[in-house]
Image (cartoon, rainbow, N blue to C red):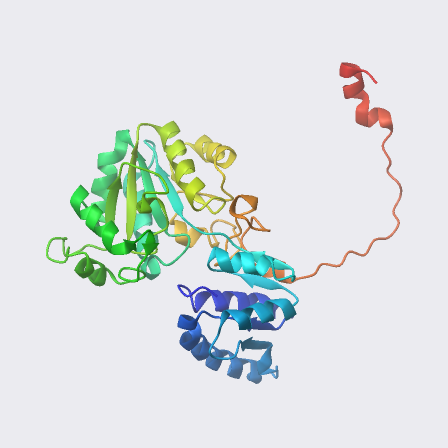
Length: 355
């Protein structure tokens, strides 16, 4: 279980396990021990009311540790790993069938055909939810040049305070040290973010998140990666072609396979992203962190864990859901034979290329 999502992920996977007739043992990070212990105090009485054993849902003995989790993975029937990619790799190398999910680093494109106000409203709702700890929260927005200024203005109306270059540099120095995320802004309320960055006396009173304009993309630029904090990078693209190039470049560094967002009224552009980008989901005209995990209006399976396919080093490319907790049994019986003749299969090939 990831430290940044110590309750929702275990709830989701516990439901999946119990729905499919399984027991589940949860392995939290050290930071997730207290909330998970409180969660079990709710789950166990509920199981007892149904006449079910409380031990259907367990957690590793406190204090949790990597050796305990590694031993658990070796003994279990199935390993499901959400969290750091080192944990995912440990699951895959445990010798037990494993399902791992990939790192998020969502990039959302706003093109010249988009409803800019609606896009800004949805991005703001997604970015601020749960203090941006969701792997599906927008980490970068790419606006095409024709609407860039309108996007900045629309984000401002939704509480997005756009920083200048010096403010952006300072924000980066607070959030990253030696290329690694610090705890200063991670999953913090906006008042903490403003105070830690010295913006509390400057930012408008209605500020909900920060917008950090960017010119560069690369591993040497921390803003290219995932933030897990109440700010996003903003890139300007000359046109949609350039926006696609930048989105692919960002997710080639982090987030490949996870998901991309698109705000546009040109549906062909969603198809183009699906074919050109290394992504397993293209979320169109929706608040990304709510939509990616499935909702009643988009048909995706409800989930907090997104498979990223081979692009993200995962064994699944869909939303982790109850179907992944089931072994399917096929009963095969004889049916009337329906065997095609070789001519039916190869006639077109033979006609063009010979036998």
